[in-house]
Length: 367
Image (cartoon, rainbow, N blue to C red):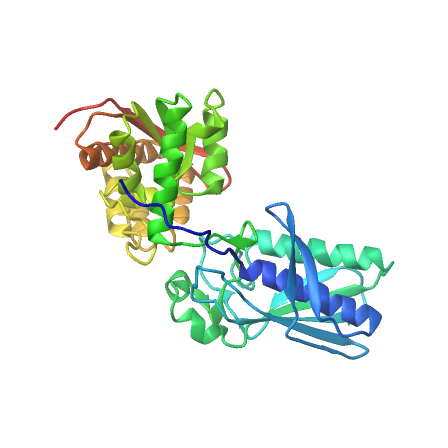
């Protein structure tokens, strides 16, 4: 039996949370004229977090605050980066948010941010603006402000990411849907998966639902409202490992629920779906599109697409829904092969907004 690592790994904070905290500090300094040494914000995971302000400067028209990103025990490319927010007064009311030095700009379609805008993702964008609105309201301020998020080392950091290939030029993206970074330790994560399956089985679950993340899990819970909470397991990128553990612990049915990006890899038989170890194969997606009736022009668009989500949009717009059913079926076949059969497998694909794309079912087979 695998040994569960001792001690709890320390969580960190996303670039989005850091940008929100520095914005609050800078805006508070601009209003009060007082330098800030810390900043407390409310995170999407429904708890408060306090950030230390590295530097804070304020004049009559502008204030700047910065913090160092702490990724906890999950040092990623942005761990230790200085995240800066500069807030200045505007003559007209409202909030304008933009990226400065080291924050990338979107140049290709298929991303959650429109072309031409700073690569500040929707949740961090909302966090920053709502927090700023709260500060303005607290002090009874009706003037408008401009917020510029900068990461001085961002352009260099971005070279360690996939941003360039995705068409995000000039720096990093400001990311994060939860505000926190959950430590990515292979041993610890695998141990947590084993534990989660054990809890599900101990609770009498013969049917479990495995997802790659929180958003997919929300879709799965809506899809399977009859199942108990214990039946839902976040497997992260460890698809093959999770499937094998399900079989080992005698789960009878596994439902895989996720989105185009990672599940397009599962469809190819890739069972470790981290972006760094397995990039999306657009030639494969183009081949599947061709098999489901897409014309040559559409097939070529898919071959040169920027993201898997964009491929989904293209196929949906053309009404090729059988594409998603075939992709889902390939996932089922690959999963059964991974575990040498013995489990009923079904797969469901959703968009990032929770729209059902397609699904497929395969009954157990022993190879």
